[in-house]
Length: 201
Length: 329
Ligand SMILES: Cc1cc2nc3c(=O)[nH]c(=O)nc-3n(C[C@H](O)[C@H](O)[C@H](O)COP(=O)(O)OP(=O)(O)OC[C@H]3O[C@@H](n4cnc5c(N)ncnc54)[C@H](O)[C@@H]3O)c2cc1C
Ligand code: SF4
Ligand code: FES
Ligand code: FES
Image (cartoon, rainbow over all chains, first blue to last red; front, side, top):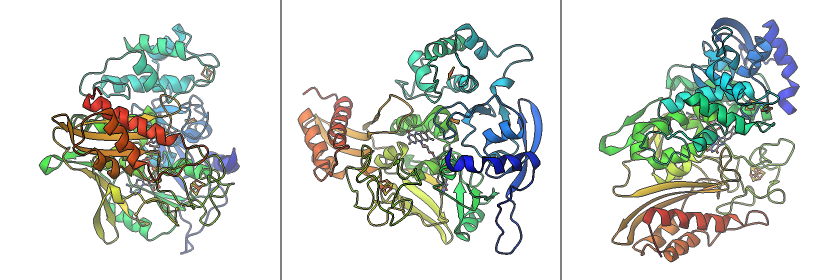
C-alpha cells in the first residue's frame, strides 16, 4: 500500500481515540499546531461528530471513524469510483476528499438512499437487472448513478452529447460515458446499463 | 504522509499571506491531485490552506463580450454553464473530455491548471525524477516512454502536461489572474506553463504563495467554428495521448485565421503558431491542413515509444480542420 498504508494505523488510532497520532510536529513558537480537527458530518440523515487527524480522507472517516461501511476502498487514488458518495446530492470520490475540508457536510451513502425498508428506485433497478455480482463496486455505482441522473435532469451535457446547446438525449452512449468513472471488476456493465436505463424512465 | 495543519481563510489576502510566510504550506482546492500526491509521498506540506472560500465560484460576464471564471468554479459547473456552452463550446468539450463525473464535481479551475504531470516516474518516489527530486535524473528518458513529450522537452525532463481544459483555454487566449503578496497580476495562459529546461521542478511561472483567483476569457472570435478532439487508449476516463483544440474562420474557401493548441505533446499545453501561420489564406483542402500540421512538428524529437505521437497529432489536427471547414478535397 505504500506511504498511504504505513500511517493508516496511526491515523486510525487518531480517528478512534480523538487523540493526536504521535508523530506530530511543533511550530517554531513551540506551541503545538492543531493536527486534529473536530468536525460534524450528517451521514445518511444522522448528525455525527468526530475528531479526525487532518490527514484522514472522508472515506476513512466514514469507514474507520464512524463505522459506515457502505462506501468501499478500491484504489484509494480516484481511479475506480468504489468510494463514491453524494455530498449535498452531488457525486464525489470520498478517497480524494479530506474529511477536515468537509466539516458540516451532508453525506449520503448508498445505504442511506432508501426510505426505511424500501430500496431506492436505482438500487431496486440494480436488483431487477443483475447490475452486480460480487457487489464491491455497487454502492459506488448506485451513488454515482443517482448523482448522474440528477445531473442529466439539470441538463448537464457529457462528452458524448452531440449538441451542447440542445437538451440531452439520454441513451446508452450517455449512460456509458457518464458512468465511466465507476469500474466493475466483475464486468456487470450490461446489467448496470440496463438498470440505469430503467431507473431513468 | 506527514501531519499537517488545516485552515480555511475567508479573505484571499489571508490565504496568500499564510502560504507566502510558510515554505511548507500549500493551497488546497478540490484535492483531486493534491490529496493523491500526499498519499504517494510526492507532496509533503506541513500546512494546507483551503482556498475554496476565497476564490470565486461564479462565471461572470465581462464588458466587451468576455467572461471571468472564478478559480473555484468546478469543472462540472464550468462545462455546464450556459454562457460557456453558448460562447465557448470548445471549453465545455475539453473539460467534459477529462476525468470522470465525480472528479469534475470536485476539481476546480485553478487546481486543473496546476495539476502535475502523470509521468509514472514522477508518481513513483522510488525512482529518479528531476521534477520531483531535482538532480536525481530522469527515468523516462531510458524507461517507459510512451507518454513522453515530442516538442520543447529537455535532457532534464520529457514529461507532458495532462490538462484538457488548459488546451482549450490556450486556444481561447485566456488570461490567468493571480494574487500575490504584493498585489494582483495577469498572466496570459501562453506564458503561464513553463517548458522544463534545466529546472523541471517548476511547472508554471507562479511563485510560492501566489493564488489563482480567476481566469479571464476574451470574447470568442466572431464567425469562427471550434472543436476539441482527444485521442486516448480508452474512450473515456483516460488521459490524452494527444489532443487538439482548433478555432478556425473560413472566408470564400480560404482560411481567414486559425488558432490551434495541442495537448499531450509537451511539458505545457502547446500553441501551434507555426501551423496557424502556414494555414493563413490557404484553400481549405486536406493538403493544406496536413502541410500546416506537419510544419508544427518539424522540430519534434521522438524516442522509441512515443514516435507515434507525431503522425497521431498531425492526423487528428487535419481531421478536426476537415470537419470544421467542411473541406471536400
Ligand atoms: C483518475 C483521474 C483521472 C483524471 N483524468 C483527467 C483527464 O483526463 N484530463 C484532465 O485534464 N484532468 C484529469 N484529471 C485531473 C484533474 O482534472 C485534476 O486533478 C483537477 O483538475 C485538479 O483540481 P483540484 O481543484 O482538485 O486541485 P487540487 O488537487 O486541490 O490542487 C492541485 C494543485 O493546485 C494548487 N492550487 C489549487 N487551487 C489553487 C489556486 N486557486 N491558486 C493557486 N494554487 C492552487 C494546489 O496547491 C495543488 O498544488 C484526473 C484525475 C484523476 C484522479
Ligand atoms: S520526464 Fe520529468 S517527470 Fe518524468 S521522470 Fe523525467 S524528470 Fe521526472
Ligand atoms: S477508492 Fe476512491 S476512486 Fe477508487
Ligand atoms: S460487482 Fe464485483 S466489482 Fe462490480
